[in-house]
Structures are given as C-alpha cells and as structure tokens.
Amino acid sequence: LAATVAWIAGAEGIASDRRGLLLLLAAAFAFPPVVGELVLGNVHLELLGLFALAWWGVRRGDGRGEAVAGLAIGAAALVKLVPIVVVVWFLATGRRRAAAWTVVGTALLAAVTLPLTGIQPWLDYPAVLANLGRPSDATDALAPAVWLGDLVGPGIARLVVLAAAVAAIAWSARRLVEPASYAVAVAAAVLVAPAVFHHYLAMLVLPMLLALVATERRGWLAAAYLAMWGGQQPALVGLGWLLNRALPALGALLVPAGLLALGRRHRSDEGDRVEAP
Image (cartoon, rainbow, N blue to C red; front, side, top):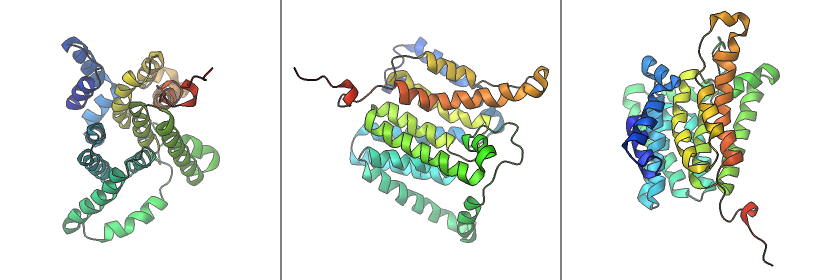
C-alpha cells in the first residue's frame, strides 16, 4: 500500500513535496476499508499492488510494459476472477499485446498450481461460478449485484452489472484520458464482483489516487472517500444499514460515476473540439 501510494504520487505528480506525500499516506492508511483489510489479512491489498503494477507497465508505453501489465492482471484474475474485466480496457485502448499476455499469464500461473491443486478444482471452477448466489448474510454486502438482485434475481443482476461495467470501461477508454479510464476500469473490477464487503473497497485507493490527476473538481472525490468510512451505529437500530451498507455502497459507486462525469476528456473528443470559422 505504501509503495503504491508513494509511486503513484511521484509518477503522476500528485504530491510535490514530502508533506504532501505524508498526507496521502495518512489518508490511505486511515481509510477504514484499508484498516479492515489489514485486520482481516485478506488479499485485496495484494490486488491493489497488482493493479498498480499493471499501470506501471502501461505508463512505460512499450512492449515490455504491456507484457508486465498483462501478467499483473492475469495474476490478479487468478486471485479473484473479476480483475479480468481490465482486459476490456486493454482492448479498447489498443493494447492487444497486454490482453494476450493476460491470457497467457493466467494460463501459465494456473499450470504452475497443478502439482499442488490437481486438475479437479479447475474443472469444478466453471460450475462454481455459474452457481454463485446472493451472500447468505447480506447485512454488510455492498455489491451492486446484491442490491439489484433483490429486485430481479441474482443471475440477471450479475449480467446487468457486468454489462454496465463493460460499457463504462469501453466508453471511458474512448472519451477520457488514460489515468481516468484506467481508474474506471479498476473501480469496475472491484464493483462487478457478486459479493463486495467493506474491506474490499481498499482496492479503490488506486482509482481515487488517479482521480486526483484525472479530474479538476475534487469535491465529489472527498464525498466518496468519506462516505466509504461507513461503520456500525447500534443507536440507529433498524436504520443502521444506512450507515454501514448504503453510504459505503454509494461512495464506492461515486468513484467511477464521478470519473465518467467529470474526468478529463481526450483532446480529440467532440466535446472539446472547436469549430473552424
């Protein structure tokens, strides 16, 4: 986490001095999803690092960088499948080599696990994915698919959320500058999962950092950051879900929504063109 924040801050010119960097680090480590992730010891900070490594590869702008980016997303997809949606961003931005390396890397890393896991878990994996349902306890579930699933059923909800994520990634890749569109892709990879809990939002540290350079207005970003603090408040009794579930979910959705609405556009975008007299 510290390495990701420090590198992004320096590479993107977010922090001009040590004080600025320390403030960013403090904001990242004080972020409640990060605190929860550190307490629970889950894999989401490792995924954050892999998303950052992929961005490092993209910023290199050469074939080796694309290979690194693809391998990083391939490794992330083996940890949790949903980072694979970043391949849509690779393809939409013309990085076919990175997309190919994602597939190759995933296959090679999966093959490395065979002596330990055997073949049967991989054969069972498609059936497991096809039969994923709503979390048995949705008290703290933040995933858009869970909210929508209460209305249309889990299967349709997952398809709708996936389609919306792919559309958002493809549109942003065509319209927004790359820090903004990559941030949308990472945020989509977080939110498209069928089950998202509070500590999963630690991965949104990367999109929020990129949003600092990809947008001019930042009030919405502060609102998203604070909304994701969430928390338990027994005094609210039956309305406690507003604080521990609704607000973090809205804050998480505000990250890609804010980038889509306010992210910097490509100079070639029609909205920025000036008609010749």
